[in-house]
Amino acid sequence: MAVTTDPIEVIKERISEVSVEEAKAELDKGDAVLIDVRGPAEWQVSRLDGATRIETEDLEAEIDGVVPDTSKRVLLYCATGRRSARAADVLQNLGYENVASVAGGITAWTEAGLPIVEPEGMTREQRIRYSRHTLLPEVGFEGQVKLLNAKVLLLGAGGLGAPAIEYLAAAGVGTLGIVDDDVVDMSNLQRQVIHTNDRIGMPKSTSAKEFVAGLNPDVEVVEYNLRLDASNILDVIRDYDIVVDGADNFPTRYLLNDASVRLGIPVVSASILGFDGQISTFVPHDGPCYRCLYPTPPPPELAPSCGANGVLGVMAGVMGLLQANEVIKLILGIGDPLVGRLLLYDSLGTNFTELKVRRDPECPICGPNAPEIPESEMGKFPDYELFCGAAAREETPELS
Amino acid sequence: MPTIKIPPVLRSKTGGESEVSVEGATVGEALKALAEVHEATADQLFSSEGELNRYVNVYLNDEDVRVLDGLDTAASESDTIVILPAMAGGQA
Image 1 (cartoon, rainbow over the protein chains, first blue to last red):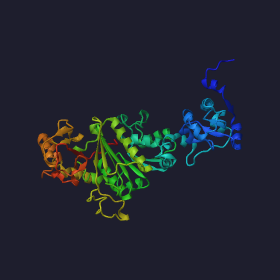
Image 2 (cartoon, rainbow over the protein chains, first blue to last red):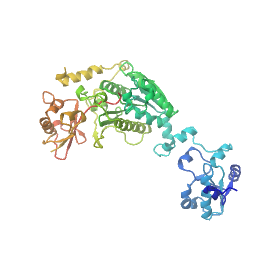
Image 3 (spheres, helix red, strand yellow):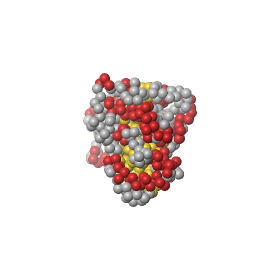
Image 4 (cartoon, each protein chain N blue to C red):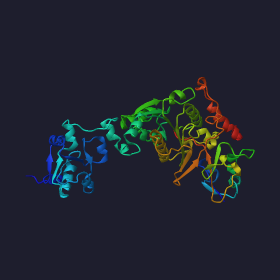
């Protein structure tokens, strides 16, 4: 006879086990107390009706409160019957006389077709996938369902968009709209982590969709392989709950601001350059808008692009993930979003600076004197290229 | 001597310095002092009429000087003045 070296097998020799069918019969008679010794994430995915959850290491402290009578019949289960065997041994050592472990655990129970308790609203795979979310009281099942039903539009699948897409997709945000008219370039891969070598030359929106498909089948990606302009912006953003702004130019940022204020859609806006980043959340009429913060775009020499000036790849990750975090808070309605606050991150000094952003009473877009826009004019916007160009000429005469 | 935080896009005008301490009892005096020490910042901060350019946001500590007394806002030794131009990098 082979000598067993598995300590659980050794333990099983000194405790008793019952089959799932025997356990079911005992429980139906109402004679036994049922203890689940698994962790909280497993418990949330599925459990047996009537069970109380106490993990093995907590038995000594907690079993008294649940089963004060040491002669009472106690059935223990876990996923496969190993942890519950150890737990049965612990209970016997504590003086419990009538203890058994359910052989094969909830796995065997389920395979036998016996009934289990499963929370509604998510599939079993979703309950496993999002268990570390649903364990958080601030998220829970209700919050995860909100995430699964949310629609978020990402303006740009580049430096900021890539990390935001990665984590929003992992978090199970159900619909991600991705606007980008660019294709993946080798020079993007230093920071745009969802794109890969073998997708160089592919539209970024398509590459993003492939990435998301490989990560999380719950997420639907809607591709917009186009550049946002006045003629298409309302149609693109109208159906989304939140927009993540990672645009690389001022005309698009002002256009997005003006359109999102008209439609009442919150925008999580960030920008990066070199070793520095800034982020704020603009919720129309609850807080300031982008124009309240920046009434006038800067001249070109004060607004270099990452392409011209360089950016630390990690900066894109940090700021894009701060955006993703804001998005999740807005969807769940938890915490304090960066409304009316601008957060600056200086990565060389590892300094965060927070500045107050006030609503501008003179704001031509969201201020009290901003003109009402009739429905027939909703799709008409000023010429932002001209606006940003004119600012440059007006403020820096040497450039004109 | 308030401290002025220089944004990345202006650091080429301050010899790479990210913080400059200057004399000045108001925000305006401090910025003028900065423009004297680092002349190349003058055109970026002020218009030809000597007004602060509209595209430059200036904060005393965490508050926009537009909601305080503008350039006349008093600045003490322990104050930090933040110069903030808009940035648009992110996508490309």
